[in-house]
Length: 345
Ligand SMILES: [Zn+2]
Ligand SMILES: [Zn+2]
Image (cartoon, rainbow, N blue to C red; front, top):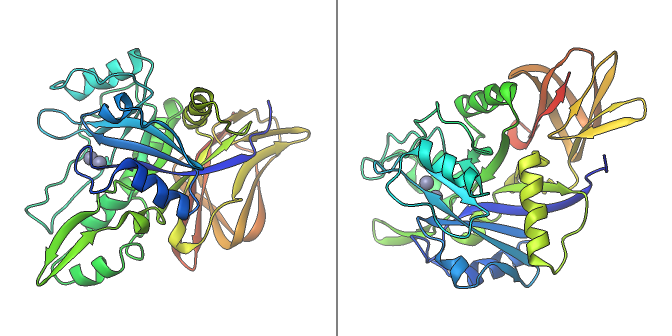
């Protein structure tokens, strides 16, 4: 298998003025370019109109891909659907739209599964409740907007508005458990979502934006590792992005604590090497290797349980047991990088 070493960094789950976002897709793409992103996955509510309007493709150095966010009649079970030409019929339940997205050749991600909002009665939460459904490709393990809203109280509101990125502590334990448990049965990619809208919000005499696009595009990022470079061929580049996602050749980072470009997690045995999303056979000793662009605490998670921690920029965990392994990287106690899994059999 070819090594997947070409890294592209993007932001997923973006709302534009096609639904309740406040800027146009070309404006958001220009901001993404200015903060060094390579791709954007849009997800306006219940519409693929930007696709019909020809907005998918390269906007300068940024590849814009258009999907949409589906909800059920109770406005729960939000689902990010990509690689579709048209929307599935509205008004369906999650089990039906998850199935139909797959049937039509699309790929789908469960959005903000663990959303709980207690502080703001006028902003209800939109959790995932249909856990009996199967057929999705991934889970948004870390959603900027959900986590930010979840911790909001009337006392910390101003601080949280002024420090929208510092407030993020990491994915919830429940979401991580769902994700680890699903992966025991089959591969489910973990992605980061920013859920950016940049709504205007009135706080006393001030009108604030929650949050400017520029701030959120510098927060939770999804990094993909590809076998080959993207090209001017939009169709081919789109396939490469979606393939990396379904392969789980991906990791999630919070840019506030450092640029995670260059992070790698792979398994080695003699002359064999496998990357995130892959499986390696164990008949003895395997090294799980990690490199990070800055010194950090690297926690090895095996089958959902914290197994070991090493400190540095290049570490190697010797393992013998079969299991599902991933790493979490912290800098000065702050959640920075979440890898996808490597399966040892
Ligand atoms: Zn949503
Ligand atoms: Zn959304």
